[in-house]
Image 1 (spheres, rainbow, N blue to C red):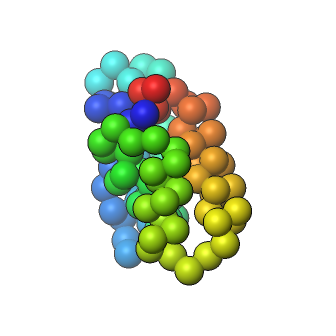
Image 2 (tube, helix red, strand yellow):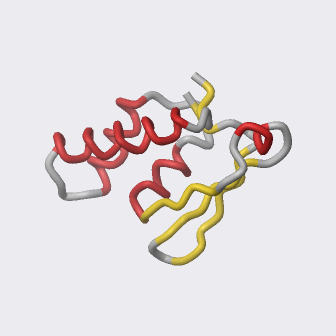
Length: 89
C-alpha cells in the first residue's frame, strides 16, 4: 500500500505533519489530515509501497514501545487514511 500521489505531506512543526489532497483527490476529500510526529512518520513511510507489517517493524526499530501499542497505533492511522480513501492498496 502507499499514500496516493495526489496527497501532499509537509511538516508543519517538529511535532505535526499535514496532508492535503490535490488534483482529482480534492474532489473526494477537501479537508486536511493533521498527524502527530509518529503518524507523520507513517505518512512518510507511505510515500513508497510498503506493507502494514513493514511499517510496524520500522516503528519498532525507532521507538522503545510495546509492539502491541505500535501495532494499534499503525492500524488506527491506516484506518483513518482508508476512511478518506487516501491509500492505494
